[in-house]
Amino acid sequence: MKNLNRRNFLKKTSLSAAAVSITPGYLRANSDRPFQSKYMGGYAAPKLENVRAAFIGVGARGGDHLKFLAALPNTEVVAICDVYQDLVKQKVGWVREVSTSDRHKNIKQYSGDEEVWKQMLSEVKPDAVFIATNWKNHAPMAIESMNQGAHAFVEVPIAVTIEEMWAIVDASERTQKHCMMLENVNYSRDELMFLNMCRQGVVGEILHGEAAYIHELRWQMEEQERGTGSWRTHHYANRNGNLYPTHGLGPVAQYMNLARSEDTFKSLVSFSTPSLGRAAYAQKNYAKDHKWNQLDFQGGDLNTSIIKTNLGRTIMVQWDETSPRPYSRLNLLQGTKGTLAGYPTRVALEGGVEGITKDHHSWVQGEQLQVLYEKYDHPLYTRLNKAAKGSGHGGMDGIMVYRIVECLQKGLPLDQNVYEGCFWSSVAPLSERSVANDGKPQKFPDFTRGNWKTTAPLAIIS
Image 1 (cartoon, helix red, strand yellow):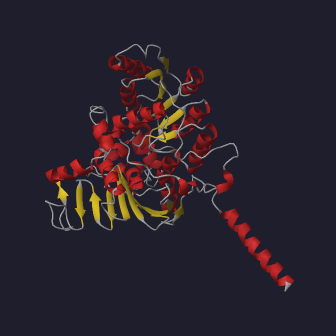
Image 2: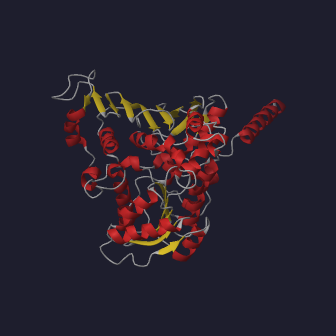
Image 3: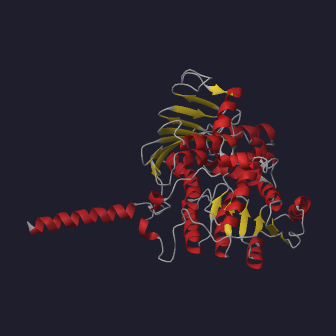
């Protein structure tokens, strides 16, 4: 009996060891957090009465963030960095235009070299760094910013690979510095209203969500030497998956409280259509020997991914920047008592909406929505909409930057933590793995190392 038990023990432990050995390294173990590091969910950094901000990459989005932040009280733009000197000089002029005081008078300017941002960080020592560069630079710039003592605010996606995302988490936990992905869509009016309605239980228990970034952007291929198209086109050629998931997924994940006490990401499957549109566009619009016609476009025109959560809820995430169709983020949420949907914005509730519909077979939409806006508009939108007017994307960019500055100055937790940025961004590399393996399910790493269970949901901030 002893020998039999020993054989069973050896068999079990051998199998366990084998299982460990074939576990993908990107999943990592919950025990991996170093002793001196600290979980950042709900973390509130010490108050910054005056926020000294630096900007890396000011060609488009970065320039807009810079201009809005410079006009906010108790902020100081201390440095602007870009490869192109003309952009740096232009954005310094923008700061002068919006500033009503001389608090931005000592702006350091850095340009001309792809590594000059490191010099900026070491010389200026800003409190916060806003990063709006090409995707491959997001992780190294965010990590070094935190290592140099600054909070990092990174355009989407937060990183390109799972390994980079783990490195960002480790750096944030080690340095006790925020690293927030700049997911501006979470601050759009409809997304904020839907969040408020979910928190009030209007749609009951949430079952399913649909999220997307459907935005025809073939015209960016005209940006051949500088600008987004000059580097993003190569991603379309070399990667096959759901490359830009966060604009649609971020809000839906917050509706569902994913990675925050209630539920979390479990796995996904992903499929791509054939890759036809980019090659056809290049053939039609460029000479045969043009560099775009030398690329072998591998990325499917449309990708559909299905996420399964720990509770068994589902989220469909679609991505298509190629096909000729109207813009959509889908933004659909199905609950046991009703449905919220976008593009166009619509609401259907069991029992109807008083004075408008009799039951859930009819949508509340168009001008009828005013009743719901008056009742459920998010208090954050109500408070900040006027202040953010004129900022990018219908004001959502301004609300986001305002909230970042407000949280830093008041010592409040940010609305989006580092783990959420990594979970939402991880859809891209996980979808690539799934597509390459004929839709095989891919497990999400737990970037929180189990601490999502004790992380409070995002409150309805007023």
